[in-house]
Image 1 (cartoon, one colour):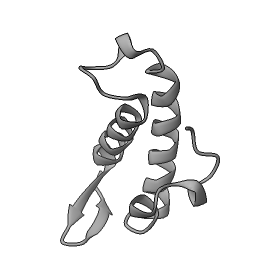
Image 2 (image 1 turned 90 degrees about the vertical axis):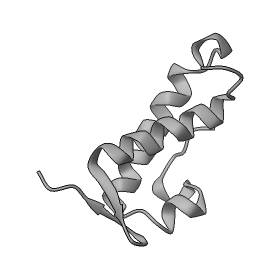
Image 3 (image 1 turned 180 degrees about the horizontal axis):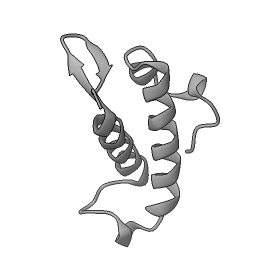
Length: 76
């Protein structure tokens, strides 16, 4: 299900990602939720929610990387 706000995101996202990365996650998840609503649009047997989470994490990793236990923004 799509998320209405950052406070609705899963604990592992809220507890680990900086605020801006959470915004990226939320937007990417909601977009993927719509884009991959049909099973034939997804890879293999992946469910809609699983696919949306994978897309969201990939979007975060476009701008952030993990250093130790913290997610930090990539340098421009």
